[in-house]
Image (cartoon, rainbow, N blue to C red; front, side):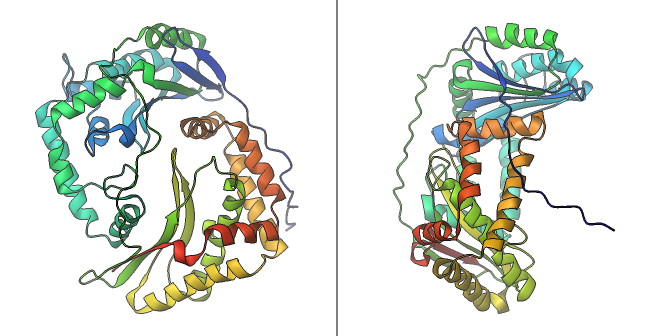
Length: 421
């Protein structure tokens, strides 16, 4: 068998969307692809956790976005959605609230009518809210038994604080505190046309596009609030950086070692992506090769940079047997010291670079991947031209540059250490 030749990725082109602006000033970004008779539509609101008056309100609105309307029960509304073989769901992030539709392209028009129902006429009845709270408590009870969930909760609280939108995790008190009036207020104030952008990918036919312009373009829903997004919420707490929680009857420990970092706006973002890939960002990384493959201390270990709209964090995540905890921590810290003190071999850089460029190439493969990539840059208010800038930075980064980045950001004394188990 002849092994195929490996070719370097020379150029990655990002196909920009068609853009239209509706009469009510909603921007619509369209990635056309008629190869399959399907489409995806996302209506993204500048909201999420960041604008909550009370924790978990955004999550509750998302969970109840298909509860009863003035004319339909929740069951009837979901039956109508199922009739078209469509999926309509709402989700919330740190800085976004999104209503999404996936359907066959010929059913976009009736499905868009159902979307408009979800945007305008959901009643959020008390019995649906009570059911959401009951389910949320049950899910929380299960998660609290998981050491990795507890470690992640403690890490974000340690980095951002328990009250910060990027730092808090649901608890029974915050679940019980959600109320109908707060949910309706959030829905009426933030799920409004002057606070959203629309992203469409797939087989968008001319008739359907005209219907979007007529319906979404005529959407009027006046907010009782003048929408202004504060880009800075202070981190007022200063929890300990080193947290060790003993979990009864546990045979393993969950480890998170990381710190507050930066987002895509930072000049070091591209180079740090390559550094992180080498260190712990893929299966061939140093952490995996040493701690999983060589030492057999874990089934998996990885590190990741999470860029957010107004901030970011980086962390190493793994689970290990309690008996091997000390040596696992020792090996993790040893790998950090090695990457701080020694230049990375050129072949290792080349391998990670090719892997990372392949990931970038995949993000341009087809309308749906283009939509998700473009949307993430748009939400974080990073120009899509930076997609190419990051690629060029990754191409140009060398061993000296990567060592400087490591020494700038990965010193152990700046990190939070969380161990649960």
